[in-house]
Image (tube, one colour):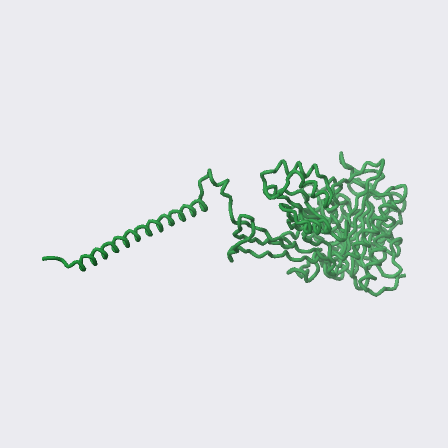
Length: 583
């Protein structure tokens, strides 16, 4: 049987078409497979390249940090003490510079500087893509660089900490380090609260480093640090610094300290500490860190205890009354012309002799003999309990970095000599912070306030925590005796014409820096006072370290007038109505 020619031709054409389609599908499949293999290889090279290729392959993603502001430090009225601003550092990418041999000269022509130093730095780091040539530019330099639009030259934002008040309260405020973290003072104390969280942007870029794509997961927003409002009032701080510095100069002293405390709230309105080197003097206190920068020095109002001398007497005086060791109207057989000899043979001298005196007069006239007599009626445990009642020997609770507990003789070393010395404010060392806290018992109702360095309402602590030291009636009795000190006693030169004050002076021998013991003719002069008498608002303490004895050295003369002036100025500033001077 013969196949018709037309059918044979159709079958052949179909067979040929089928064969062509099969080869075409095979070719397309092979091509797709090859493309997939190429893509897989590209993916493998991008994600986990051979170590020999990694250095040359580079990356096409970039990450840019977005700086956030560190929180501000403010005074109690919102004035800026420390603040952060954005500054710019200048950097060069040597790989993108058109002419490396002239770039250093081009930059110095625009903004000044040392072209040789820049060129040397670029040469040393020629393989780097980021070479910083100027850490911080001025605003005109930033504008000049932006307008110049030089290839390979860029501006990198960085945070700069500014202190618009200069060295005012420098030791208290502190400073930050290169990474913008607190190194000292309040910058260190509240570092966690003020520290910002930088943002981050990760993006895909082209070979010319221009951004191509930003994934939503590649962006982390920045968060600024919190502001901290301190209890310090810049007006009061400036007044305290000016007056203490003047007293240090007037009496050729080695230094001075002052604290101003709001005894109602516990807020520290001012805290000042100054050291002064004198030619030809062997200074007993130094602070090497302060010589590098005022903000790096230790804050001696918190860190350095001192012997308070007679300013300590009111605390033992009132406790003796509370314990029934003496009656208010009891007349003690204090000496008329020679010192008092204790039962264990120690001779106690007074600066002036008044003869037999009642207990009020012992405090008003600051009679060492009377204090020693009553100290002998107290047991060692009772004397130590009296010291502890006013929280001496423990930190004040202010939170200042490096705060000292002071020095209180331990029970194992307590002796009869210690007993009489402590009653007069010797053989015990306290910090200025401890002193104003303890004295607040007389300005309040017998309770101690906690010194605070943040303004009331600025944090969760409302300043309400107090501790009772003595009964309220005893606090009022002691306050009345301290008012008489300003009229009849060692506080006369510190007496105010405008506000009725109550206070006490102290003059203690200066401890030797080496070898132990005391200098015979060098002193620590201090004065502490509260006002107004009827409704106390402030406590002011001033300590003048090692005044020139040839000029003056008694606390009422050296430190008292400074306390009066700062008390008057601060009360007027706070709007407290003047009170009549007691007669």
